[in-house]
Image (cartoon, rainbow, N blue to C red; front, side, top):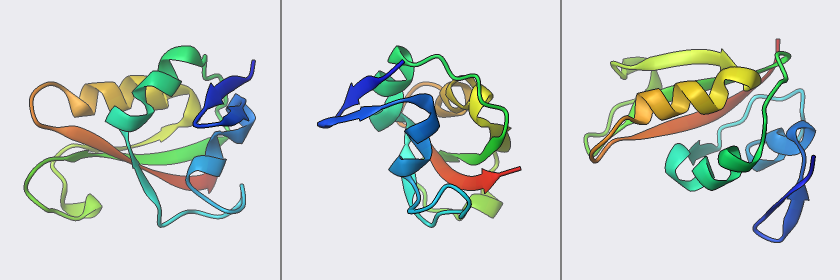
Length: 101
């Protein structure tokens, strides 16, 4: 299934394009759950081969490894885990692509 996203047609296999220049390379780019939530709502993620780092992003600056809530998840679980970590209020979840398992 392809989904229109900011002028591009994306499928689940293309999701890494939002983060990295190559599917086998981890990215330094971070995307936020609040921005990607409309995209996730349209896609059914089933891929267990690609990994992501998800951590709580709040108004207080802290690095991913210092975040109190963080997880390393497969693409299949990305939408659900990012939503839980973002929670409610002024928090968001930052998502970073780690590459294939």
